[in-house]
Image 1 (cartoon, one colour):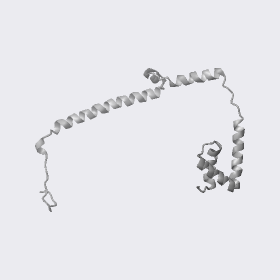
Image 2: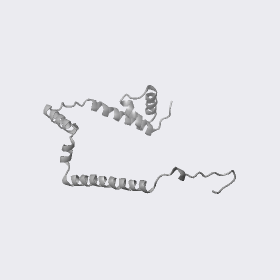
Image 3: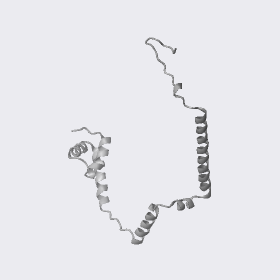
Image 4: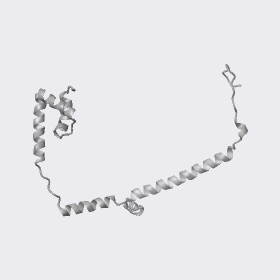
Length: 142
């Protein structure tokens, strides 16, 4: 049996009233409630609240309300086409999107040219590879 403090018991008390505890945990919480007047009062209040809530009835939604909500939901989940998305953007966002795309193309062309220039000026020569070998005990390059 685990000795419960009031804080831990308060957490488990909700689950006890909802019938979600294992038999061992339920027994531990019930034992704590027997010995703690504060938790016992809290358990009584929570049980009364649960009993009152179970008496509540929930009205059925109006059929028109259900249909209008469903149609709004369906309209939101339908994927828009690229053209619809584009038309939905304001003029500022369209201009910013165009600028970013043009800037991306320009940057790609610029970087491609730099890469081509680098390849033309730096020709790879396999003989340019140097291998440094050290003899045991030596600490400097020859």
